[in-house]
Image 1 (tube, rainbow, N blue to C red):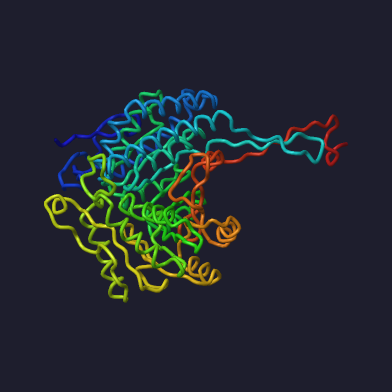
Image 2: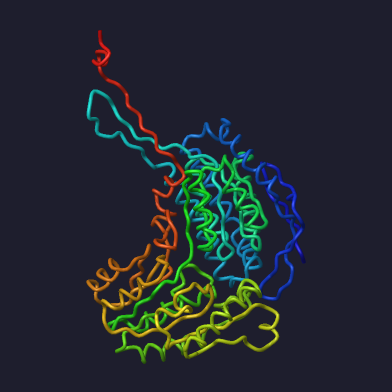
Length: 490
């Protein structure tokens, strides 16, 4: 059954002003929802309404603990509808139900964390250097545009909405065109929680049109973006012209390092999870595995056995570990990269071709794929594939290893597998990356900042100070002098 969706724009539930379009269930290509895209005029209406709403007493007059209460209600609203939201997320992008449940739980936890952080975040009385009292305070920056990706919508949207709302900012969400449903449901939950009209709007539709309109809008004071690096660079250029702050969480080509002393059971399980969970559609996917030559053969044998045992299938089934890729076009992109890797001289160890059978023919499935024999400089090893494709590379010398790991335009995350804590610390310090996982992978906490370096982006999400990304700092000087300032004294 195809759902007919409306969206929240400027405090009103209605159709967008753009054309009607449908969203597909990647497991079988069926149309599961229809809605009208938003237009540039809708984007302007949403921003104008947000700017007006943020000045009204119903929002501007709230104390931090009162905003915190609204965020706690949103967390509770997500949990009350957890299974429904997980099933809708599954239909939106084809992730296995076990994974979408985890994403929904993560979103609820994010709102709960930022509710607590909002209520307890403190400003400073700074050390005075004269006859005055000095303070550093933070105020809401203004209207925030949150532009989110299709791979983990509800979690990504929560990571932007929650701290922005905690800071006191209205949020206009631009979800990925093909996965609009979670943003719409979060807006509905926010309305039920008591978020005033106009503070949350959702603009489904094409990013090239709506994202550009939001980034360029003079009343938008910050953009929080997760997505491709080329789009992020375009946003950064426009933001520079406006002198506007941005948070850009972009691509990745994350290395995972297996040392000679690693626990191979843990390392194999971690590398499998790092690249093949989410079908590799993850910016932090551990897509380059550097394995010490002394354990390379044993690791490869276990890795291939593990990859072959992964359950690729219907996302609705509890046992499924890997679902389909998000679209036919994206699967073709992954296939082109595999063909490129083989043309560059790589040897295919497993996967690399579509699976036979009615289930796999209906949906956009692609198997776990491992290729070895390529140098670190090969395009398939350097460029983000965003699919279940692992490059397996041996290493001998630690200095050369570090150089190869860092010889990449991206710097989002890395994994290190070793029993030697000194080596782990040394490698972690040397690698150019925003997150280091040691003897684990793809673990997250709302309390710990996340972001990248180099072409993986700028700015940080999560953590108490994540709220400050959505504020502007203001300094106060309170004169305590009894006599007039001497410069102008008679």
